[in-house]
Image (tube, rainbow, N blue to C red; front, side):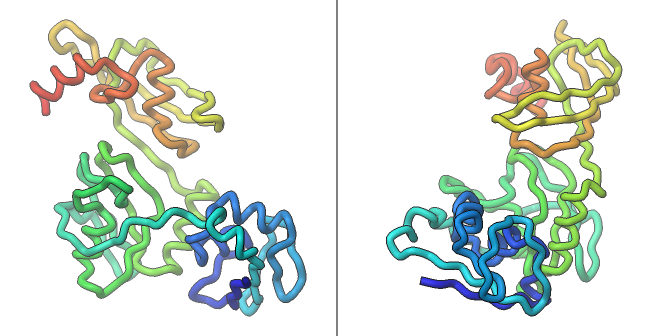
Length: 259
């Protein structure tokens, strides 16, 4: 079985692995790397074994798939998206971008057990079919903050490239449990097997019923899953409200009294 696509302005991504990932989302990421490495991907009828091979407009990309391996390399079926109303504030909007303030306790994208409306579905509802939203970054369900949504594929590609080349910066305000003595610092550690790096600056301290809490501003250099939670918990300062890495009894008290 073969999958074949001609690179054009609408589906273009420069790297071969990124092009396949974006145009064939049904193929697992690990399988994409394996297919390229083993010579099952051709560009203009020539086998290419480099993930970072640079494509050009007009190139023909062909993926050779074994029938008995289709189930093995395919992603599980993704939850279907449907336009549903979600409350969020719009910070900025033009013909290419929508910048919103994501509320806490709302997922960005539906998961296997997600029943509540998500941000992507809320933006779909807001668009009323006038544009196709593309998420270029994510925030945890419990995190509130600025999210940039592209209104077309070209803008999505450009924003993704800016993020990858670190021409953008990500800042977070986080309330930590404990008395953080250093006014600023940098954390470099391993999170789920990958190097994670961030910089922080102490903004303010609070005394709540005899317990000290530290408000910090964080700049992320890497975007590992749950990075901030894990790195500060390992340092001994879990995020207030985080039951996975902190004190559930304390968090229950905080939610009851402060929401």
